[in-house]
Image (cartoon, rainbow, N blue to C red; front, side, top):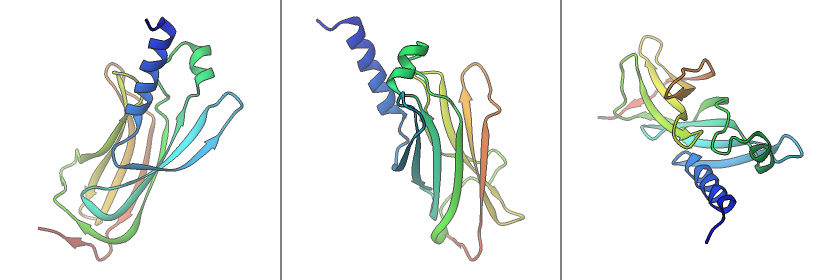
Amino acid sequence: MPTALARLCSAAALGLVLAAPLGAEQVGEIDVDWVGNDIIVEAVADPKVKGVTCHIAYFERGLFDRLSKGNWFEDPSNASIACRQTGPISLGNIETDEEGEDVFRTSRSIILKSLRVKRIFDEDNQTLIYVAHAAELTDGSAKVSMSTVPLYNAVLQD
């Protein structure tokens, strides 16, 4: 029969597996201290805009940090984003209202917190705006990062 610690470790591992955004490819990992905390860098292609790739960097707590602080199931919401044209841009059927649309999201805790990236289309300036922000069930967060991609000679798809 599994011990309570084994069940806790299994749940934590599941939470970490679920934390990876779909379609993200890890391209870097930076060790920030001797206790196993890392900065993870991932590349994510915008699924509706061909030719745009976003790179997201976020903090991932190590096992020792999780044990010592007692919060097994949560990583900080801080993230940085940079999006660039990585090929000919071709716009699919994207949302054009002020709210924009989710490009992707990743869980930062088992239930209550996520890191999201939204795309907003600035039609007047022919620019895509990508905003990375934390979303929590009970508390909003001011932790935000933004990147823009100008649409020079972009092709609109039907």
